[in-house]
Amino acid sequence: MLDFSRPASLSAMQTSPLLAEHLHRLGEEKPLTSTNPADAFLQAYSDRDWPRVATLFAADSVWTMPGGGRLGGDVHGPAALTARARYIAEQGVRTEFLHRLEGKYGVAFILHNTAEKSGRLLDEHLVTVVTVKDGLIIRIDSYLSDVATKDSFFD
Image 1 (spheres, rainbow, N blue to C red):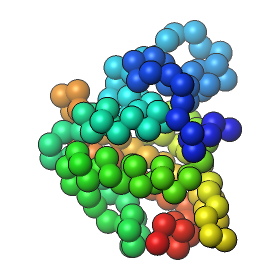
Image 2: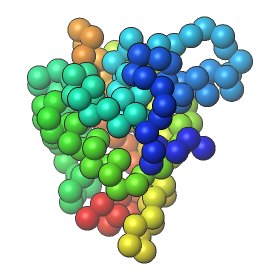
Image 3: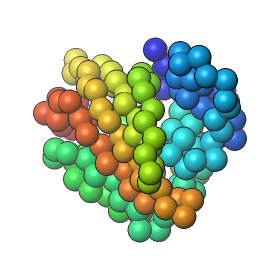
């Protein structure tokens, strides 16, 4: 399991450790660098490089999240999307990378998040779909296995 509760040691310009692990499991040798904004987002999140995260979003970007509370609903613009990513990281969430799926307009990451805080547990699977246009992230859509637990944990 990859531990995102601590910053990774790789720079944002190197291959994401998440993607490197995935490619290793598949036995592929082709290098993937962070030229894809979706991959760069995952790397910058791993590194806790919030200024880099903010540069990856289009001015009219949106991040949708099911449920209510602090993380539910839509947030708009680079500052709000960066703040959401930072808040998730600051709650001690550990993210296990399971799969990366590539589509015509972006990338979907299948992840497993776990955390414990004040006696509350988070244990959810999620799909994070990152849509890219003109070299920037225009949309992130999160799909969760347990919305009620997410709402309880983050509020």
